[in-house]
Length: 80
Image (cartoon, rainbow, N blue to C red; front, side, top):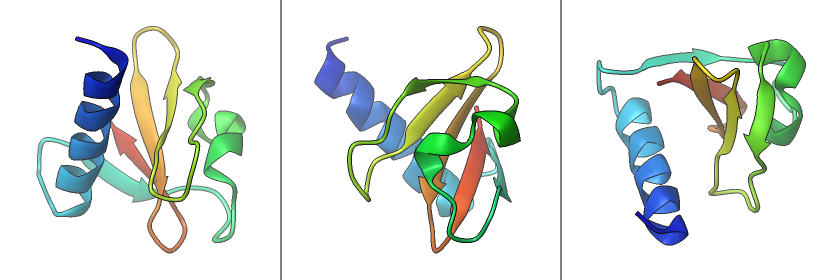
């Protein structure tokens, strides 16, 4: 899988989760106007991928657990 495919898959997961896919846990995280690239404290994990634009997601991981954080009128955490 190349980098573009990884990004596409990550964004598909975020869309599915926001559309109610029950395979993923979704919850608001941080302040309503919080920066999705600055959620290490809130997730308890290190950021491993910085979102590059508004339609992108930031990725956090501790090596075992992984979380996508996106902006849906406020930061939303998606556990994967």
